[in-house]
Length: 429
Image 1 (cartoon, rainbow, N blue to C red):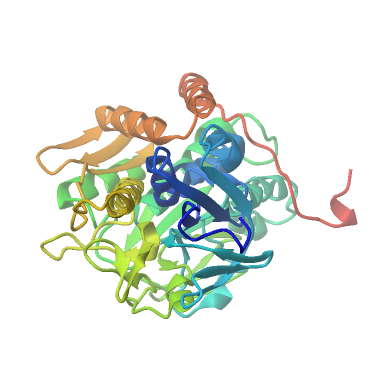
Image 2: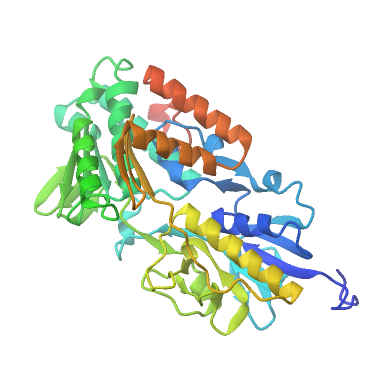
């Protein structure tokens, strides 16, 4: 589009920052609209974050839970993809500032997600990595598998015990799923692989500062999850927040726990979107949006997903989960289409909650649908079906189903590769 072209002849420009659930849902909902859509993301793939923990624990490969953005949108003729890092938004000029230049917009959708937060202890990140990206998952997988390898060659018992101790901080769904998966990896998948150590003796601890794990679930399901974790051999510590964390372990309450592998699953913070926009935000950095998900004073800018502090019409917060992001993206797309057609907009965003699910381990999960609560094997099948349904692309669904069936029947995990990093010459073959 050249500068000489008339503003009345060019199509409406929609720019979407972020190709997560919210961003992609908005783009797809605009496929038949008279708009030109530009998707900007610093990575070239859409990631299914709810299954990242399975990559981190060697259950799935990264390609099973990710798909190239260009491939997803290849047949959508009104969409183009830019792989670039965003550094700001010029609201007066209506331009997104990227490392590759400025991208003009008529309507902007910000869907940049969230990152892990350490509540003011960012120095812990080096020793207790969080889980938000594929790089995080493969780095955690590397730490877990290397711990067993190094325990095999450890010369003293204290070092071996520390190497075989795994601490997960945070008792939400991610923490519960990680702890259960690590326990299953040690007790089932690795049990015949080593000679000097018995992987079944690995110690897995889940530390939650609150009163119970899965605090967003009903107490009965929370208790069931804790029992299932104990059955897997996971030690659950509640009511004792971590007060110190270093390369040799953590301090929870007044107890020092030696552990060489610590994983953070205790909290999230929004992306820098609120700073880019100069918008009001909540305590974790999410942009406070209007009922239609637009930014106050800027009806041409929308914020969806984990980046937005969304609420229901009665004032309750909308959970930061995939269905909420998808619904938000679709709502914004419908609002844009209504404005262009000069018809009444859909009105306030209304989130429809389908339920909460969390898996504890093989054949064990909890599901809360409000009107009914399910646990055990039935909940596990529901959890699996829901996650496969939300995966992008037929190939991903087939790959995940086959990997899960193989793991279920054989107790094996097919992605136990130690990749990345440089262990120095002493570890070279």
